[in-house]
Image 1: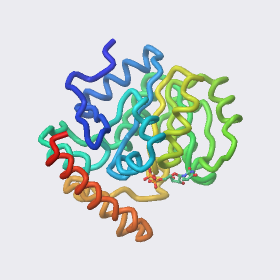
Image 2: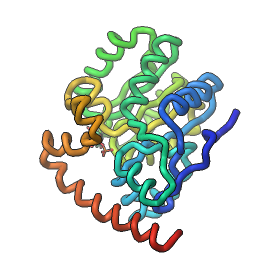
Image 3: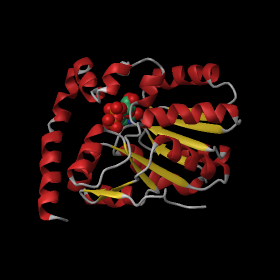
Image 4: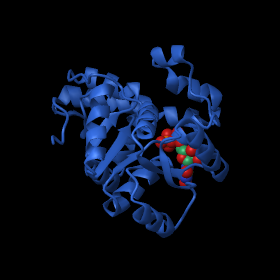
Length: 246
Ligand code: UDP
């Protein structure tokens, strides 16, 4: 089985992004899950790229992932600026929902780690109702210090898919540290449990089409505005990379 999707990865500020599309990538993941291949997927946006630049251990860690995918229009723009375009943005949330649907149809099992207690409890209900064929191997909220109980539970239940939604860098650190305990899919998916449970609303389709999901989130949660300050810095760094021809 091939590890990489067909085209070679696109490097943005030293981070290699899979040059694939959602359909192709999904089918690759499903094959790997069926074969119990240990798979770590990072869904990265410009914030993650810039964080990795400041934090070398985190950069090294995400480079150990099997796949880094472009979850953010900023990554697509960055690749274009570097004249090495990526096929499309693949939203971690879309991938998550598709895998739940497939998992339900194919009687797979999944473990969910992340979000506040009330959100993860609601997630259990939503998944049981909407994806009835999927076995919930277990759930845990995302506010833990010691991860030993969670890991023992994952080791015991051997789920096909482990979704970690604690935000970066915690989710990638957790996966990198613990992925050897179960040969399944391990994926970090930020605030996806909040969205699936309706705790946080995702941008309407028209905003998504205009690639303005990030703006919608800031309008809804103004406290996120400071996180946008990274975007101009990211674009400047990409332009510098383009000029230096690295
Ligand atoms: N969260 C968590 N544990 C923490 C901090 C955050 O489980 O220690 C959850 C939080 O409740 C929310 C998600 O992680 O559901 C963060 O979502 P966000 O979209 O902000 O992710 P990011 O953009 O940081 O990847």
